[in-house]
Amino acid sequence: EKDAARKQAIACARRLTRTERDSLGEQSYAVARLKLKIAKLQCEGGNMEGGLDDAEEAIMTLKSVLGEKHSLLGASCIFSATVYEKRISLATSTPVTCPKPLKQLTSYCKSMMNRALELYADALEPLTFKYSYRSAEENEVQPEIGDIFHRIGRIYSKKGSHSSAVDAYRRAFEAYGVPWNAIKSGTINRTDFHPNAAIIWYELAELHFATNEYGDSIHACEKTMELILMVRSLGKSTSNDSIETLPILTCQVAAASYTALHRHPDSTRSYQKALSELKKARSSLSSSDRGKWLGTNEESKILRKIGRSLLREVKVEEAKIYFVDALRVLRSSADNEKCAELPGILLDIGDVHLRLEEFHDALKVLGSCIKLYADQGVPEYDSNVERARQLFDDAQCSLSNGLNKSTEKSHHPIRVLSAGSPTSDVSLLQTPAGTLPTTSTAMCSTLSSNRHIYCNETVSKSGKKQLQSLLDELTEESPADEMKTDTSTSHNPVPSGKIMHQEEEIVKLTTSLKLLSAELRDSKIELARLKESHQNEIS
Image (cartoon, helix red, strand yellow):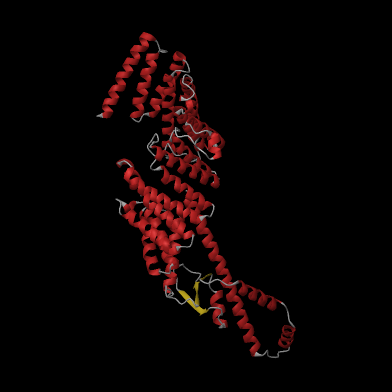
């Protein structure tokens, strides 16, 4: 019914436009007003392209009839620029208010951004003319001009024009009643500033984070929280009532910046602060906003981020608690099986079980994780799927070798995985800590016929030095070796004791080298996981 009424109103407005055009001409104020009404109705109905065509014609008419300082022209320019921003948002699948730089912008999106910037610039002159008739005290805060510079800065930020965005944000601060020199000095003494200044600080934090300026991003987050406290104490509200949700986003940006700087304890505290702010916001958010924040599993996402931050601090038991809480929150929502976050949480829980040597639980959780990825259509070559399968194989390998949480720590298990399939039979060799196997033929053949070796215990620096000295001794040709060569050519037998001794030394050296190789391989795997986790946190 609304669409039918809207179409009827558009048809009526077009008939009036033709009548006014016939009587007053194309370049008349009445025709421009009617075209603006038609443009708004079309945009409300989803026909933004047709609406923009009518709005652009109205703007050209108003410029020629009323001049460039009329307030109606400014309002028309702001309306058209806002519609362009919505079209950019639809084309890039990002929210209008998101200040993050957009990657791989098409020429069409760039042209719409440029046109929106031109329209916002045209809207500034009528507003400046409006404020010129006010007193100096009344002009200290100019929220309409601040809003325009705020939007200009956001568009420049999306385009990736860092310096232009910062300059636009600076002018927005001044229009909102927060002088730039006060911002640089870190002291804001006045209380009549516009609350949207807090939103600009947050967008600056996002901009600095996107350009890898993590220190500046943390500073901007701190300033955002300071202004939020001032806004709350003064009882003010932002233009889109986001003052309750803004701390949640700000704390997460600060935590991601701390993670990039490898300040993991600070990152954990920031994520925990975001979680507490989310719980506070539940009581003050409207029902629609509450559904938006809790329906999108925001609490589950933050709990998972806390768990991953704790894993970086090697606090595995604490991380497990947060991962399980994230899973509980996620499963309490509707259609949780279709949620893209669910297999990721199961992957983290499986990783924790594996680190705690709870291999039975790890197999169950990782099996469910792999099945969910397959049900959701995630390809096999996806990094998360590959990681889940690798962890599943590791748990299966350890379980088939009889490893469990009660394994004595005085013995270090060497898991030798054959060169065949990842799930093939695995043999387990255990030796007392600090010693090496002494069986020569069987050990050498086993180690040489296998390609992958996994070790749970590292070799000490003193052990590496002893290994190097043994290598030096064997590479140097000693008189005993020369005598052995002479006796072998003369068909004299070599004492069996020396042969056994040399075989034992070879076995020790071979096994120690394999241990070092396994240690290096494990370090590379852990580094790759940390890099992947870092990229996921950034994205």
